[in-house]
Image (cartoon, rainbow, N blue to C red; front, side, top):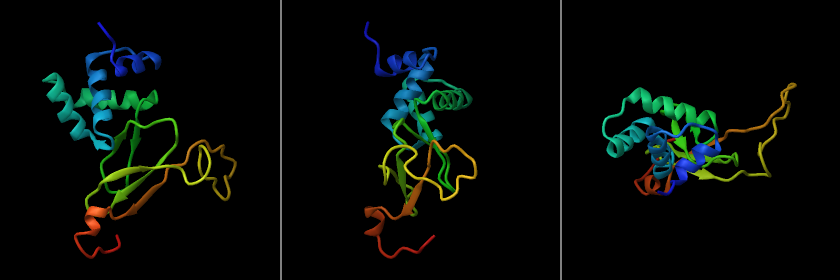
Length: 145
């Protein structure tokens, strides 16, 4: 019997391996930037009956140990990103909500430095760029949001 990549990653993160955790981690990897409803539907398709709360609990646990990243664009439900450890940023379409990764503009984490850190030790910067994806641009005029 072979271990899946999700099982190996859970063990490396010192997290107990359960079928729910494997299914949720696999779902996030299959659907980068998906919201919880999408992840829940995928996991239920894989495992059958699983509670909404159980999936939320696993998403929270995976985010806590750094196996996924929770991204919260303003006015949108939280999304879950399988790309972790590199402090990348995101582009979000104002019309359809599509989200894509964008690499840091300068250097390594935290990728940006505040003008005045006010005594904080900065270790991460979260930037979301807003605009219109190519598909939505082709639909015609857009209005700034």
